[in-house]
Length: 408
Ligand code: ADP
Image: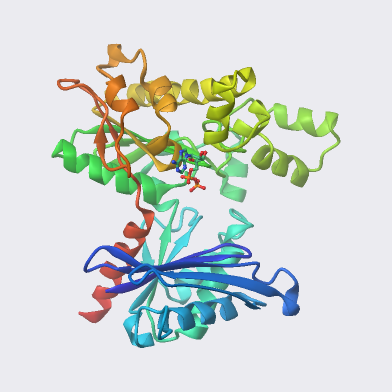
């Protein structure tokens, strides 16, 4: 089945056309600057046919996501750089949705009830939800007969028990605002945990820690194949230090900064999301590659930032091992998890007491392009793996599965 995987942001729309029968992405692209100047907006589309390697770039009027979706379909159908002959060959659309609140614990086929529930998630993800809804509306208008599926970043984490997802605030505010831990990157954690379970050869009784370390990072405790706990919270700001996000700290720091720096709630939120993390501590960059290069040039603050990240990951591995009552495997994935040996080493060193025998040599000589790679020594009781994530594959296969139920 050809599934169009859509990731709609406030002014962007990323897409991939996925051929599920052959497990390949046949085309991908990005529309940018959608609607930034209202009706007179000129946006940009860049599209690549990955089969014939033909590319197409254009600047076009792009007032909203509906217009952008129309360009995407035009590009996919184009005689030269397109990859399908008719609209009917785009058999389904799968949308990546950042926040499904407590309403969605799995992927769903779009209908009026689903759209109404997604509307209720606006407060939980005020930047993302309106963009997702626009992306969905765009597809509904341009491809009214094509079934659509929503795949949520939060869904996989819905198995957490209340003691894991509740905050120690008064219960009335939890009830009033649905203030609790939700967790994010669920599609990625689900994919790499599933791959790790295949390697372990069983699900029941397994205890895995999955580390999705990218620009945004989160770590999950996965017991019996289900999420027991995860580091991100009500928003993606919680957990370990990230590219530009601060991660966990004493909540009293927030009102302190607001009062001392004269910041509004929006300003402090932007500061904690955009100016902190690797960037804020190192003063160099949010990009792990730049921070690593700065360390090599002797920059002490860059070293501090990376040491903080490694230490925090290790702390979560330890606390999640305690929560699960044991550990069978640690998985690293996403940009940093797949590519940055020093962080993996910092996170796994001195964990022999847990049964982790980390193979430094294997860690320092991971082949490229990165594939699933074992980083623990033969006989290590706890397995350590890099497993490259593939969120689009999960979105495409969930979409296919649900759309096939319509065809029965
Ligand atoms: P996002 O959360 O934006 O999807 P990624 O998963 O792409 O982020 O991760 C981005 C991070 O991965 C950056 O800090 C980057 O430095 C790091 N990284 C390290 N090495 C590489 C590499 N070879 N290719 C891509 N990213 C890398």
